[in-house]
Each structure stands twice: as structure tokens, then as C-alpha cells.
Image (cartoon, rainbow, N blue to C red; front, side, top):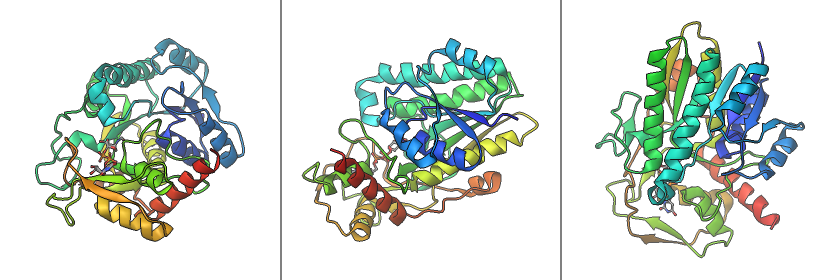
Length: 341
Ligand code: WQD
């Protein structure tokens, strides 16, 4: 069996960490990325970690013909599809950018897969498909989905539906959607990590950039929520644990003789508030984060974290790293970026 795995968006944050984990597990990942939302420097970082080059296909995931040509001459044992835009706020301002890239890109890679029929397929989905889980803080895969208000989240909701419909048209296909919670942290080497292009949307890069002096202060969006300390609660998962879950997902699909379409939560199973994350960051790294409380951010879910029983029973996977590991690795990565400026 070929050990080649095609990883779309493989130069991205989660994609690059998954390239490392696939190598560790003995696979030969192939990156498909046109660097529209990632940087070529990630390829150099992977070279330093792996001590070897990773095959790179530098073209648009929407170019179905080129993907089909590649798959007709190269045997791959699986496909992991990360390539998508993921900034919630930007998706509201520029919805067509998100629908074109995230939906057309998914359809493009699925057309190539279904042509080759029997390539296991892992899709990068998101807990955002749960929306505000109506007072049910802990969500399982059976928790009802809510159509997300932001176009970004809707592309994940619709992506899962497209995969479901494709599976019902061909029950030989082996597919899995992983619903990520909040990925944070970086590889311990600090050769790869989260590279927000422009002002970060997500909490942890904003914390690390504030601690590094890039921003004067962090604004915590709301501290009067009905939670442990008034700030929103999320399930923050170390990106290396999340990457390892993709290897487990691929191996599950490779072990299936029949077709399947599985949906799995990938989180730690534990919620942490914004203030708890800031506190952990300050304590672990012995630095101060200057912050103030500001108005609530429209659309923010109050509290959500994963029930991860299915990931354990189906994939034999659970998170191993802690939030302290993640904030330590995130800070090491931030300092490495700043040292190169
Ligand atoms: C977390 C908490 C903010 C920034 C989104 C997507 C999800 C996934 C992760 C892609 C919230 C608070 C944040 C800041 C703050 N994306 N915050 N000040 O919104 O839970 O999830 O990103 O995979 O699909 O929906 O993540 O990091 O933006 O926010 O107070 O400067 O931090 O209000 O409570 P979110 P986030």
C-alpha cells in the first residue's frame, strides 16, 4: 500500500502540524497548498523538524483537473482536507470569498476522490456547527447542529452536508469529519506554529502578541457572562494533539472494509475561560499580559466544550497535552517569530 497522504492546506497551522504527525507515524505526506493563507516559510520549518523535504503541489485546491491528474499517476492512501479560510469576522464582511474557496475547494477535492472512488477522506470541520448549544455546555456528536450565523461556520455546516450527501450516493466511500474545538499552541521546536496573517482573530495569538509588545493590550470581550468568572468558556486543544487525531482518523478509515461516514468531536473534554487562559499564560511564562474588559463580541458562544467519548471509543484517541503545555509552546513560538524580525 502506498503511504502517500495528500494534505490540502498542508502549509497551514493545523495542516503543517499534521504533516509532522503523519511523518512520525510512517506516512509520506504530500502538501497541496497555493499559500493564499499560509507562508512558504512553513515549508522551511517542516524541513528543519523532519530533516527532509516534503513533496509540495503548489496549486489551487479548486483545480480539480490537476488534482485528478496527480491522483491518476500517483497512488495515495488517504486525503486530509484542511484548505479553507477560517476567520469568522472576515467571512461576515466578505462572504463570497468564503463560499468560493471553502465550498468550491471541498467539491473540487471530493470530485477527484469520488473519481478514484476508494481513497479515505478526512474533512476539517469545526465545533462552530453546534452554534450556541442551548444551555448544553458539553456537546456530543448527537447534539443538534445549529446553522451558524457567520459564513465561515456555515461553510463547515454545509461541508458536512455535502459529504453526507456524497456518501449516500456511494456507500463505498470512507469519510470522516473532525469537529475541532479551539486549536492553540505550537510544535515544541518553534519551527512551526500559528501564523495569523494580519491582526489575529483568535485569543491565543492575540495574547502572545500583546505579551510580545505588538499590541498595547488585550481586550477581553465581555466579563459578565453566566460562567465561572464572567468570561466565555471554550475547549482549547493543543494543535499537536489535534494533528495526532488526524492520523488516528486516517488509520481508522484505512482499517474499514466497508464504506462509512463518521463525525467526531476533537477537543480535550474540558472548558477553560478566557481569564483562565490568560492566567495560565502569565503563570507558565512568567510574563504579564496587559488586558482590559471590553464589550461582548457579537455571535460569541457563552460556553462550549466537547464530549470526547466517541473519539476515545472509535479512534482510540484522547488529548495528552494540557493548556499549560499549549501556552508555553505558543509563547516559545511567538518569541521565535519576533527574534527573526
Ligand atoms: C475565543 C474566546 C472571544 C480574542 C473561532 C471559530 C472556530 C475556530 C476557532 C477555526 C471568545 C475571546 C478572543 C480577543 C477575546 N476557528 N477573545 N479577545 O470564537 O471560540 O472560535 O476560532 O478553526 O471555528 O469559530 O475562538 O479565539 O476567536 O475566541 O476576549 O482578542 O476568546 O470572545 O470568548 P472562537 P476565538
